[in-house]
Image (cartoon, rainbow, N blue to C red; front, side):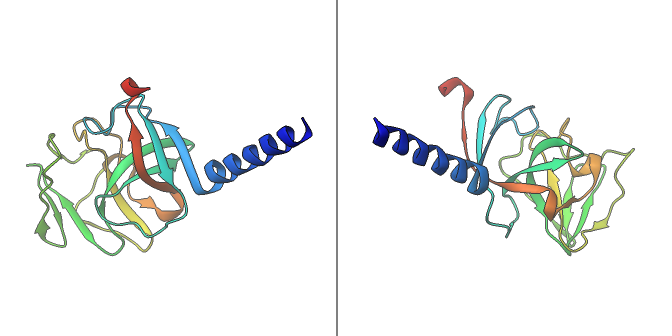
Length: 158
């Protein structure tokens, strides 16, 4: 009996370390990443790798709220979103094969072109028509990014 309690305690500590410091688990709260990730899907993200690249999906926290989005522009890059829905990075138009919505600027909040400062990322939701993302709240600081999404578990599969 005593060894069973020790094994359970060791397992509990291992799970806490894995999912408290190395990996994170979070439900997708909204529809900002549809159709790839839907509301209610379970996201597993990796916290330790802080080298973020374009097109990676990340979990971030701003003003106590959690958001999920795709990195579009990296530190030092200049982003422009024009009224016709074209995104350009450093003067080169961006083609996104898996994005099915137009990317329009939010006129009341966005000013373009905009250059990302050091440790700032421009992050967009895949459902561009309604996502709360960098067009809404501005560039995201590296310290606000909780981790890279490594997989999502579809809520229907649960």
